[in-house]
Image (cartoon, rainbow, N blue to C red; front, side):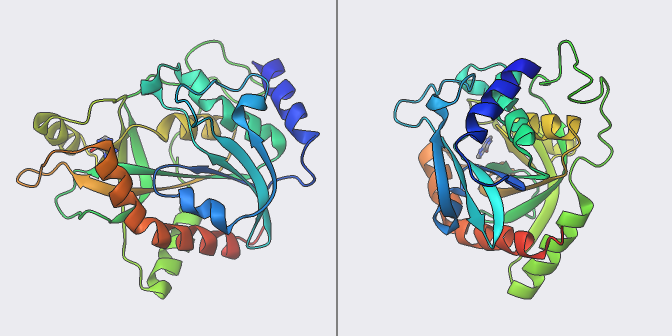
Length: 271
Ligand code: HPA
């Protein structure tokens, strides 16, 4: 794996001028952030050696290099999901490559279903912890050069970054929730009994991404900030039919607020 990561990273390094400091995975609801980036280089995933091949035609995805609030960043426009048929190691391969390019932090975003009865559609939830119900991307031989065999997970999401965003949200008058994200394989949305089960085991929201990428980032020692937009409610009495279109539409409505918070976080990071 090390060889493949190096090969992908070397290919990219030849095309970029500056080392990115921050990696951002744009999930449902953060796509608009791309417009705020002063783009310097855009590399389609399909061009990068060893990158997973997208299963969705016309949605191959891109790595976008440029500046956001004066900082060099790289954004993943489009991510890979377990339900598409990739193994967990494939979904997370791009995160390994971003680390080899030099990123010092990772920001991740997604859309999810809220199971906390206090949540409402459109809420922004800072992820403070997770429950992983997708096969772990670290299963298999471990390369100590990447990270330890048994990585610590006592602080999966960086407390300092959470505090910065909470303070920024307060100043901007943006209400944010905090909570536990439970990752499932999908592609089915949950049955009412499953939503109830996720609530019972300690989740505030449930979704089909993010945690594999976070596990790999933490394996390599990258501090992570992650945020979720609540696009539907898995709360008894509030469960209605959900569709992917509904999720996209609901996420779009909170995208502006989430983008602003990410920009504030970048502005306030002092290193
Ligand atoms: N469940 C799982 N994934 C999701 C949901 C949901 O309710 N909403 C958005 N992504």
